[in-house]
Length: 84
Image: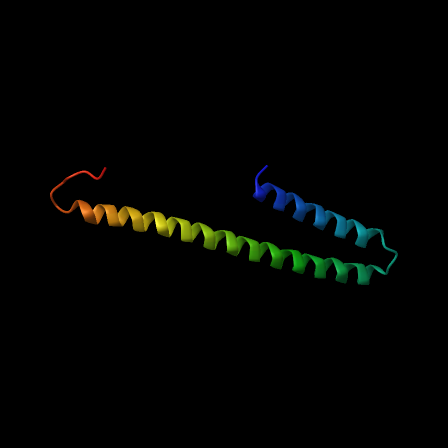
């Protein structure tokens, strides 16, 4: 199982558990809605942060790959020789 799937599962479980706990707790409706809104914002911020980290990692890896291709292309020159 990949780390990505584990993280998604943990996040989904945490959200479901928190939502269930809030909905089952005896409290006024207005307080419950405020709690749900707060948890939603926390979760959204966490997802945004995780996605930003993921996107930065992808950009970094592709940047390294394109640098390598550019370097090999520059090494071939205009002679048309192949890079092995």
